[in-house]
Image 1 (tube, rainbow, N blue to C red):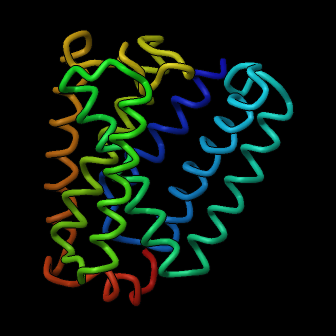
Image 2 (cartoon, helix red, strand yellow; image 1 turned 90 degrees about the vertical axis):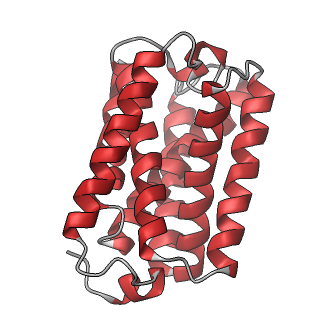
Length: 210
């Protein structure tokens, strides 16, 4: 049941990010922040207590509280939301790429994901990120999260090894192919929605959420 709940949550967030990544930035990044915070809180309790991922009431309570904190920060502060959003997207993309290339050590996946997060966050701060790049990144990150959620729902992986070696491209190549197709669909949909693809992240932020 835990895997199904997490899977449905991941699919919902992933599809929203994939298809609507350039729009409704405050709402989107707040939801994304809540998702990242929830996973971070649950993982923290799991690592400290060794009771299993969301296997205790404490795990759920901490996950919800950290998720609410991350969501609030992302909604209220532009800089925090951009850093949080881009860092988490980079973590997802870095981990997915490493897994697709056959990296089979959990610590390696975490390290590569973290490096990807730092790189994207730094780039977002240093550059005036074009909207087209935001569309591409959000589509691929959303597709990756959606595929991970579907794999949880269909019991291909479980919550404890969502980024471990069992999710390599060699074992689940069709899932990764589906992720690429979904990302392409997301890019197409977002480009059709965009009135002008050269607006920057700050210009998109200044528009009312739709």
